[in-house]
Length: 429
Image (cartoon, rainbow, N blue to C red; front, top):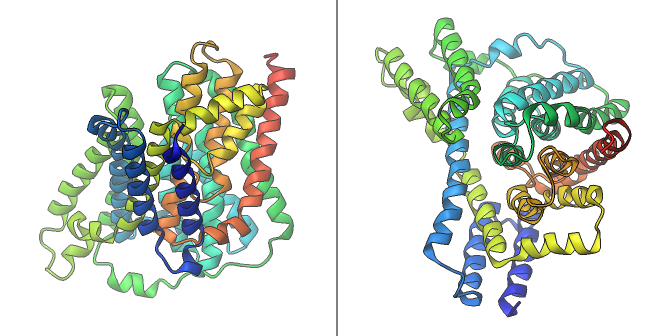
């Protein structure tokens, strides 16, 4: 370890603090994340000239780009559905204005949609739905916060619900039946416990947005609205099927769906006038996608990749192994750390440490999938779902910390203890 090793830690902490204090400092978090990424890689180049190669940076960029292109494709599809007012098919069915009842409905839908679509896509879809249901920004932020918790909880028990679970599943460390059977209850508890506690204190009704403006601006017919909605949702649902059939990464599946929708909407709206056509075609809708949030994601993941390349995360894994020892507690700590540092390199480090130590479906791998998946809910930038929602709704880091983090932590620890107890007494690990 040299001076640059410690400089990288200091700069990461300072950058993280600037992101957390975005609103008081009046500096956009995306700018901070991009500068953080560049500075960390500069320090890595000077501190570890023997380790740095352009190929190394390209490998990291390739892995990150898969997530970014997936995010871009999914957000564009959701925006296209929204432009056609397609989400009214669902929102029109939700009549309640009671906050507690609506929170349970939204969270349960999110929880069961996430294992199928994955937590990132589900969070994007559900935030688009919330915009149709709730007009007040801060009320919508609260529901969006619980969408993050529910999406990460639902994604954790599915082999295709979260990036880290996908890593463990593809690597053969967990199998489909076992990961669902052994982590479903802890994952459900990590959502239900916060919901139950919130239900005690939450009162009142939400204010629904007025629909007159949307109806006036929307140039589509009911048939077009329904077609785009079902094609859009179908293309999202088809992504895991496409991956299974072709063994190609998920972003290729999302690009396939986007391409098909692009062609169909171009043909569908070719007769519309020049004023209305850009509002309902991909070429026009894609301009509404929140590019700064995608660049923020790029900066954060590149910054963490620099720490991974310099050995910070490997050292962290070794330190946990030497000074903690208990595998259950190690997993709980990894989950908490995944809310600060991206869970993908943390899980990759854990796999590197223990891949020759435990067989497939060992309780360590199953609890790792749960903890890395749900622990990211503790902070809003701790998961892909959180980052996407933060970008879409412009949620303040400190607001989430005050209003959601404690509930997410209680749920996370409840699920962790439930898995520990089930592993010892039910499954006899």
